[in-house]
Image (tube, rainbow over all chains, first blue to last red; front, top):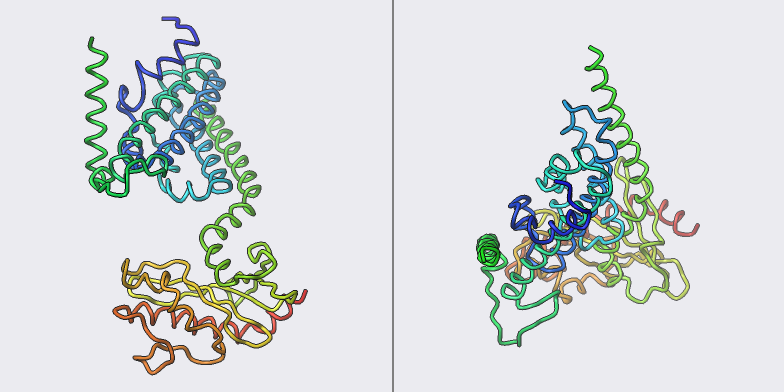
Length: 197
Length: 194
């Protein structure tokens, strides 16, 4: 069962990559991946909260009584989310306006509570750090990939840079909610096909 | 019983530490957040209507109490004189409140310019109150001390075709700013000179 720190880190990048493998945290993944910029912004915010909350929860795991552990986890996560929210407002206000309600909603993102409960509450601080970082980077990569597909086809741009000529007619469908579901479904399908070999 | 007390204590400590930390951070970032909001929401409009001023109106601002409402005023320096002041008011549009910033020269009591900040008007129709420069330009140079109405209501402002409601909303906001200006002028003059 004892895995190396490197393994704890890399599992988040492919074997257990959120949201594809864990299929957790789908709501923000579907909602904010209209543009690559938003995808990366959301990913970085989640990574920060995930790493901080994982480390703190792992550090406090002997103090937290079992009966109220969920409440304690939520308090820790909510604190870091509010920190991110305030910092984003202060330093990257346009991004904050774009992500809007999805920043405070990181609190109820299942990935965070899931990692706290399944990993950080049972492991030491260094593996928890690696786990949080890996999962966070995996989440950021997933969002970026999903957002890249949607942005390229939906608005004909990548990171706000036009990739097609002026004659390109964007598929408005891709930037709407159904486009997000279909994209996610196809990506899951491709990932499963690749790993079946 | 002892077990329960422990639960209480732990949760209380957690919440207290978290609350304290966040309050500290909030007061630390408050100033900056306020500036960012001004910069990205009202900033472009203020910069546009106070074009050519030699200071940063977003930094050079003061607050005044108007009854129970606190209003922000932005000062513009033109030709070395602190004689321009801009502030935001609201008028009823077709889809909701229209936010309008009016810049006034305090020496001549004339409008320097107006600009729409926030609105929820119909895109392409009422939204032209914000995007059509010719509409806003009509207010330029008018004395603030007069009623503002669109031509269909017997006033002096040409309404945007197809968007009389939105045009009326902007006029309403300018009329409101006229009232505020008349009410607060002594205080504004006092603050602007200091």
